[in-house]
Length: 389
Image 1: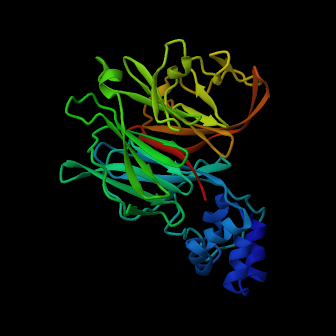
Image 2: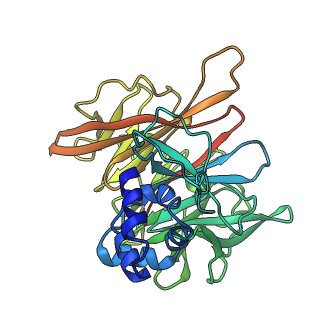
Image 3: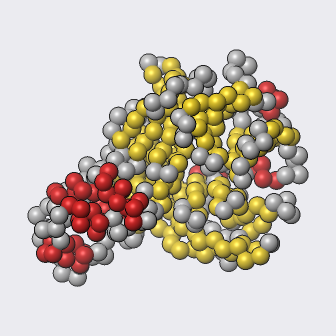
């Protein structure tokens, strides 16, 4: 990567912008923070929407991981994206612009031994709001609900991960004002259900059609599902939305139909934060420190073959996040640094390739596993998402 930077200084800087964009569009986005060091012109091009339009035309879009943290209670949320560390030059030369990262990418506590690290992302127009209601579609992260003057709004906001700016959706607000919204995505539509057992909450489910930019209302058996539970959980897979409470029910979007799910359907044992869906197969991290996949025909969870027990990961599922990372499993977790006076913890990330070899066998292969960020113990892991840019 260092050799590429030296090459660009000598041969590429005199090219017109359209050719430079064509070159930059072919480079993995994980190298962009390093390329920002080449020149102010490079930083300007890397921040431009034209670069991402070029990447789309070239078919170079890729899955990128985003992490949201809160360093203390009530503090502003901070966003990070995973990047690759450049290969160091054996004889580094003085760099007059060393340390000048793009305003979109800033380093923070990067472990020296890691090949991957989380880089801070400067986002505009963001304020304190609930964190449990994020979903990613394409190159955009959507949030439903926001704290305004001590109350909760029903407006929709989205983060454009190309420019790292927040915007308010130009669509009319949803009718409900969810305190604990459960947000899922099915076939490019956003489904919102109130997840808190409030008798005054609406029994309808709000559906946002991104193509038509309109909200639709779907009857929802919330009260029946809740029973005596205080909160609901939700899972989305294969065009179906599962609501999990005292009673489990499933909504089939294509048929606009609700059905009761029997307890023999063990898919409901997965937690949304520590599970993901790849090619209509659900994967989860289990308390036994293993990765498992759901066999819908056998109605049971099976271990991914080829993987031993993941001893580096804590047993508590509440500290593990999992996403579909371009057809691979990306796993994120936090682990406190040992030491009597240590006030830090490490954030680990691992990526696994998966391959289905038969109806009863799915194999997993660990590609890499590293510490990607060091943070204070007070830091709270909020969101872990994958977007395509």
